[in-house]
Length: 390
Ligand SMILES: Cc1cc2nc3c(=O)[nH]c(=O)nc-3n(C[C@H](O)[C@H](O)[C@H](O)COP(=O)(O)OP(=O)(O)OC[C@H]3O[C@@H](n4cnc5c(N)ncnc54)[C@H](O)[C@@H]3O)c2cc1C
Image 1 (cartoon, rainbow, N blue to C red):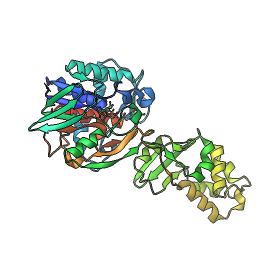
Image 2: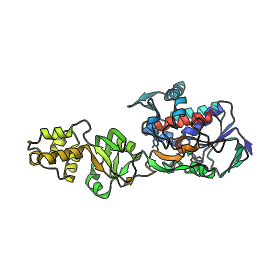
Image 3: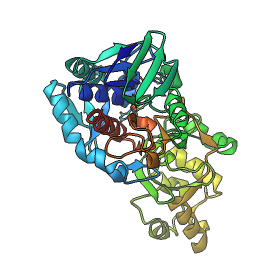
Image 4: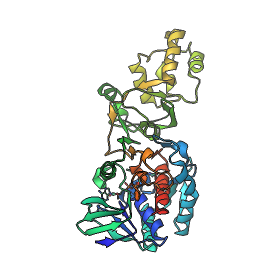
């Protein structure tokens, strides 16, 4: 049995950040990772350039059963704090759009930086090393592994969510939460492409690669960015964003002409002999305009429509209802919505309220960011909160 001040399970973004923070405070920290490659999700993130934070990150950019839960951690470790860290490590970066910061070079620079931060804190590693069992003996947590048994008064679970199982994701955090009596908000894939039902796929499937600047709404959530047709359905930033809010049952509402007063625009052309799909091609990809008009029996000369028919088409272009058949699941999702219920955690330290010393951080917790660097910022901030406490 080896004794530590803290054992951190999962050496992803949050786990490495937490171990480094605690280690640099003079604590003896063990980091256990079961996968044979380090930081795979960081490596593949942001198309290989890691969108490591968002300068505008705030509570409004996160989904959670308690939208205020993330406030304290985000305020105590800000995007500026992470930028300072990467500047100290000489990592060059740039803003792509909407406050999204990416590395100029490969995202492995972020993994190397976190590793160096752990080294600076004297963090010990067991990797690759599965965890066989976790138990509690008085004030101590005992972690049994094939490498031996470690015990510590603090255990931090940083094993992430369920996305991309082929690079190491497991439901470990949820199992530990259940073992110690914490509630788990049912997880589901988020920031995920959506599948068309067979009839829509037959109509729009060969538009794969076509993109449309659209505003997509579901309930109160509303995102204006690109929508991309794929050979299975819909993707692109606007779809990924809204997917996190979609209930899986009700249609999305897509505004295909977000900058246009469609009623007035179509009315202005109501005497034209041009077909509606030809007019729409001025503002939408031509092949999509044709398919959309055929689907809505609208591929006719504008002068043949009554004023009411034109107004109805205008309304449909502004609120095109699309009911996907489902998502493409955890294999294609960027994050997991749901996780350890924030009602059972301290927002200051990420510790379980009823189990002193047991902490959950990162994506395992029921806090999920939008697309655009928000998820890493939550990983850094929640890790820093726990790492400052253990
Ligand atoms: C393709 C893709 C691109 C993304 N791009 C971005 C982006 O650009 N910007 C952004 O903000 N977010 C992005 N994300 C989301 C981001 O990667 C995650 O939100 C973030 O990595 C979560 O950090 P984490 O440390 O909580 O979990 P993870 O990074 O998933 O780390 C969890 C670690 O725990 C390990 N583990 C799991 N189970 C066990 C176990 N039983 N025992 C021991 N170890 C275990 C895993 O192997 C892993 O190393 C992307 C995600 C994907 C899939």
